[in-house]
Length: 74
Image (cartoon, rainbow, N blue to C red):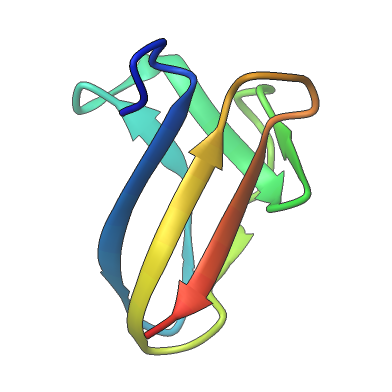
């Protein structure tokens, strides 16, 4: 995470399918889905469609709303 905990970066491995963001192995507080350019905080937001199998650098930006994420294939 960034120093202010508003930007999170990392490397992940994705499969075909979909995913969502959550925190602390729980869906109670953080449950982000929808589109990478406009992440919804609604618990019933749809899953994010995976761009395909592979390893990606990911950045989750919680510094302004709408929350966003970027994926860059390695």
